[in-house]
Length: 291
Ligand SMILES: [Zn+2]
Image 1 (tube, helix red, strand yellow):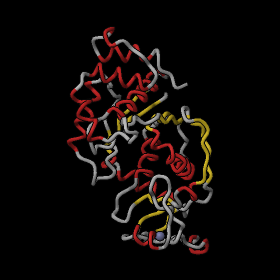
Image 2 (cartoon, rainbow, N blue to C red; image 1 turned 90 degrees about the vertical axis):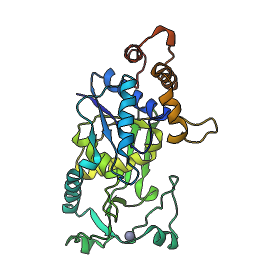
Image 3 (spheres, helix red, strand yellow; image 1 turned 135 degrees about the horizontal axis):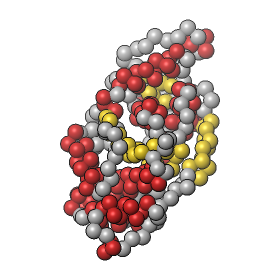
Image 4 (cartoon, rainbow, N blue to C red; image 1 turned 135 degrees about the vertical axis):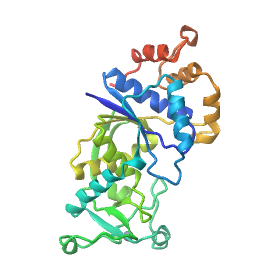
């Protein structure tokens, strides 16, 4: 059984960019006769707001994008993230890192294209120390010790991808010093435990996917099929922000929004041929195919 998912962060209302991602993932899963899940990515509890979560779900329903099963929240799944960390710990693939961002900057660490500091492994333990394991530390970030950092995958839309995570980012933080689990850990664990086989999402995550593949490898998880859809940009070329465009989406009829979103996916429809969102989606199912 194929399974896709839409995984919004509830830090703002649904906007055209996230509608396009939801729609592409929905159509792809349904076209494969698969299930489509919705997962709330509120692992970053500082930015997540419950009010946005209900608004996002309401907007999905208004556009006829009904999901299978119940919606899960990352904030309620910490036991699974702890288990995954324990598994990596047994393999000696975790170590505590005491470096602050300020600290890394003052030691001359460079930023990558995503504006993250590339971590050169200052706290990386020697192999001899690792063999005895490292005690968990409360005030330290928890990093994933990457041994083989090269990855290769074929994205259904972006084509062949390859790279080296140590050059792109360094050993990944999986749990921050404040105790929050990071997006990288949560998304990999959740996609595996939820049986997600097809990940269709915005191309802003494309540069991070190699990290997810290395984590999957270390945890013994299969790698799902990936398709990263081009981001919807403002007329100025800026990435669409949740605040500026979300209101427009909520104030416009779902038929108009779906027409626009489908156009971004290369599917042209005549809005006058349809009276309900589900009719549009049924038609679009015959028109949109990633593979
Ligand atoms: Zn460190």
